[in-house]
Image (cartoon, rainbow, N blue to C red):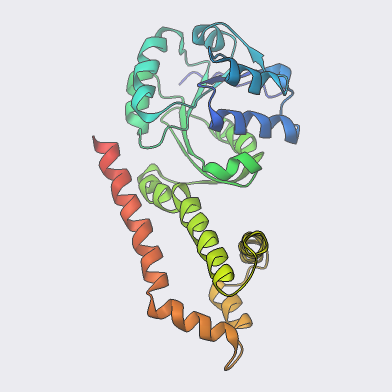
Amino acid sequence: MELFPIPSETYKLGFIGAGKMAESIASGVVRSGVLPPSRIITSHSNPVRRDAFESFGVTLLPRNEDVIKDSDVVIFSLKPQVVKGVLLQLKPLLTKKKLLVSVAAGVKLKDLEECADQSRFIRVMPNTPSAVGEAASVMSLGGSATEEDADLIAQLFGSIGKIWRADEKFFDAVTGLSGSGPAYIFLAIEALADGGVAAGLPRELALGLASQTVLGAASMAAKTGKHPGQLKDDVASPGGTTIAGIHELEKGCFRGTLMNAVIAASKRSKELSQS
C-alpha cells in the first residue's frame, strides 16, 4: 500500500459543511493552538455561517470543490442523510493523498468508503459539549488510515475535549451514551433546579446551583479515579439528607431508567444506520 504522509507542520484542514459542529471543532483547534486559522478553510452560502467562521480567521472559499482541492485533511460535518450524496459528488477529487473524516452519526465506514471510492477514512463521533471544549469523542479507523492519521485526528479532536479509539461495532452504543447523553443530563439539571424551586429557592439560584453541582460531580468522577459508587458513598452519611434523597431516586428506578435510555438510544441508532 502506497503511503502519503500528511505534512504535520503545514497541512491544511478543510470542512465540508459549516454548521455548529464544524464551527465548534474549528474554533477549538484555533483556540488550542493546534492550527492557525490561516490553515483552515470551508465554504458556505449562508452569510451567518460565513460570518461565524470569518470571526476567528477561517478562510471561506466559493465551493466545496475548492475546499477539497486546497485541503490535506477534510472533515465532512454534514447531516447523515446528505453525506453520501456529497461524497459521490466530490468523489473524483477524493484522492488517497487526502485524509477524510466523517462526524455524520449513523453512517458506517464501509458506506463512506464506498461513496468516496477510497478507504483512507476515519469516523469520529463527537457530542454537543464540543461547543465549550468538553466533548466526549470516539474514533474508528477505515481500511487504509494509518496510525499517523489516527494521531493527527486525536490531536485535532483532543482540542475540543477528550477522544477515545474504539471498534466501529461500538458506535451505536457510543451514540446512545455520549451522543445522546448530554440531553439526559440537561433533563437532570432542569429537574434538580425545579426541585430547588419547589423547596423554596429562587429560580436563578436553583439553576445555577444545579448546573454547578453537575459540573463539579462530573469533574470529581473524571479526576479522582474513584468509582462513582464510592464517591456517592462518601456523600451519603448514615441517616442523613443525601441517603434520604438517594432512597427516593431508587424508588423511582433512577439508575434503571438511565440505563434504559442509553439502550433505547443505542437501538434507535442501529435502526437508523441500517435504513
